[in-house]
Image (cartoon, rainbow, N blue to C red; front, side, top):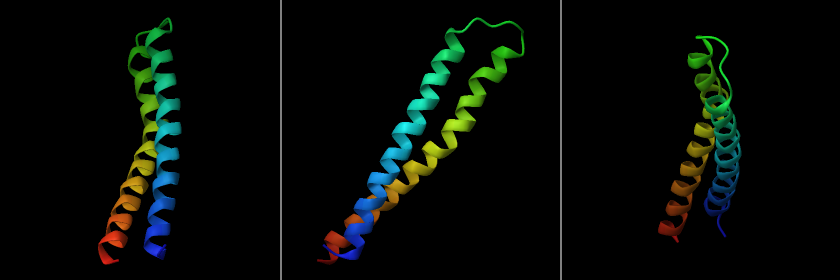
Length: 80
């Protein structure tokens, strides 16, 4: 196993965990925001945006780590 292959696998695993767990947490809060009773007009706009910002940014970061790992792994296999 080369260093590129190792780091590619490492980034894929860590990025996958980031994307799944942060995105899953954001999805749970998003479902809660849509099913919970709204008390004011501002709640309709604030509730769906907060989980996307709080959970979406780390999920996007995890997706980028996953893609970086996939790219590194492909390069490692290509060079062997």
